Length: 637
Ligand code: ATP
Image (cartoon, rainbow, N blue to C red; front, top):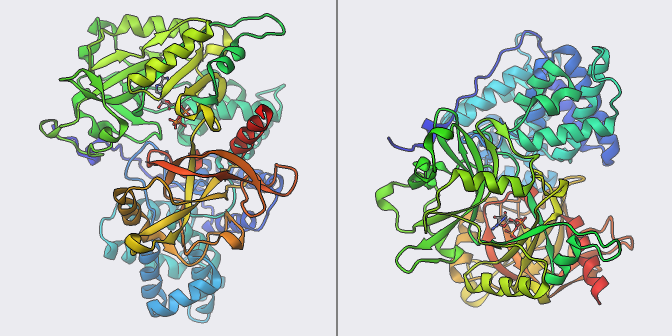
């Protein structure tokens, strides 16, 4: 059997709807959202729109939501990416509107972005195409647009893609063209994060339930909590909306739970600075209350979720919900690790994959793991062997284990697996509340080529598995950073400065930013030029040059004094960065809305430690996290 990615991709059929809702309605909402700066006002507008859709045709809520999230389907399904680069869109515009490339590029600089440019070009053609008096058979409906987008994603050649897009643009009004093109580009720029969309959706759901006399006694805060919780376990709006229509928002959290085959959002950790810090989180000096906790090695590899489906299929997902099954073909024969094969029908495991030297019997550095091909690996070609370190189990034989304590979950996975050295092991651990023992264990973890420790609540409610949450119930304690700010940051590359001397022709440095999910903005926090090897710079140049742009995307928040030589039209890559400390800055913008003194926060002496291509920009360190780190640093001084 080959592991071709296509063979693994379930085809999502695109429905045809009886109720026809014009695509223009959707485009106009996007336009309104773009022009509404306040998050609360955006939420209201979105809620009104969802109300409108659900009243007309409940089943179209899913398509509309995915459109607003700028995705064709859930993240974990491959081959649903559009991500058209500037070059291809310019070509589409050239063929659709008959301008020369150079003149399109000049116009692009004037208007700011490709969507806006399409709007303008289409508007100028109104005498040719009478889009205002469109007859019904010319009109584009939401399902037409959606079907077309799905087809375009599956077509291979540029020529065919353009062939499909051109006639559509000629049937669309300027505002429809604008958001159709922006969707293709992967940048709707409506300034609404997943969070905002979720809040509006949960309110619409609650209101709808009230009209059908269910979900009584629930308020909007509660509805928001439920939708968030369910989405973190089953990040697929098609499934959620279907279930909601069936049972209502109140019952949703009881009727929908994680399913093998659908990667849930992993639980995350907060940084802490010392063994003492970690200890004091669990031992309350004031009340004398003590919570039990466990220290585990923090392995330096790739976070993975291992799913065995009922039919025995194995799927391996990255931290980013990407399907990595074809990267690790040697692991799909997973049942060899079960103590009793007959007792396992399905499961979901949380763990870390680490490069392993089987001859020397030791863990290899993360860099070695990155040399493995990302897709379609053939077993015969594998040079870098890997070991799975299991540290959690989230589901077994169809039962969700999220609500069990970590102590209970540990017992369960220890019962399921037979460890095999260098192939599947349990995370090395220590249970103690002695500070010096924790410190010694931390030293030992670093000697054993780990990043440090994870310190986790072991018993009681604090120790349940909370998908997508970053709390003090999981803490990371890293040796390297104890002197600095306690952790590394994952920051978004916004632009670059051209290199000099031996870096001529490459980028020499980058402008980085943190993510503000409130309004989907990226806020500058430092320039960086240290820590890059020639190999890194080469790799970054190869990936990013396609996104070079003279203009900054509208959601980049920066000061003209830090303007880079070239912008990147998409927040494509993240860098993991260390720094000496954080300080208030007159020019950088990170957390500027919340520092309270109209200054942003910037990193001092930043140094790159790794390219993080396993996270997308919405997973970057948030501006709020930077503020928290800044404040905790101030407390210590
Ligand atoms: P980092 O840069 O620290 O990996 P992150 O944002 O990817 O940051 P964090 O929540 O900060 O994730 O740290 C947890 C990460 O540590 C997990 O995502 C996982 O990849 C890794 N890890 C290694 N060993 C363990 C363990 N025993 N338990 C939990 N996570 C572990």
